[in-house]
Image 1 (cartoon, rainbow, N blue to C red):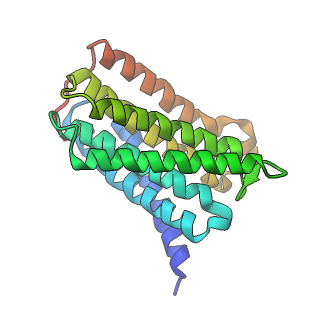
Image 2: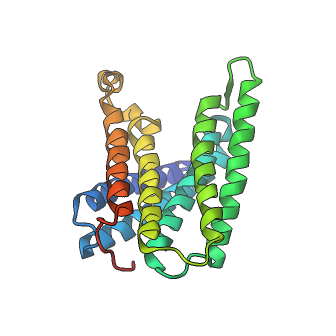
Length: 229
């Protein structure tokens, strides 16, 4: 019988692969259409599950995968909050929204603390990851936290700003999934020549460029009309 850690790792990788596939399809189909909504739901479910398992693995194997705990928490809060913005057109201040903001606060503080700790060590690494890695994730969590607080202070949220929140949170969640698959731990499955070529960074770059494109369109009022998820 396989050890629990092995089973968890396999499930984490498999659900992460599904999330990457569903995210790619969601990008490719017409926005707001039934196919987009269905693949978005599948992406949210797969990404949330994979992120949760990643966070658990980060705690179990903290000697080598501690940063995965924070990355998993971040991925989960991003896609869940992004899904909520599309699902609840007029409800952006519910208990779950406050809970997500609280988790983002704790995660930001934890990542900044881990990065600061890494800076004090001889090689400026903590549990195998550089201080810059912790600060990078901490920056994303911090941006999410600031957005959470600004939105929670507003009584109403316009359609375009709600969809913009949906877009950037889902895209960054997808970015984290793709990064884990192509330039993170998942890169080990590719030949060394492919890893050294830089081609594995293209999916992440593509996601960021597409995110900026759709944010520009949405904030200019030219984005697609979306139905509630």
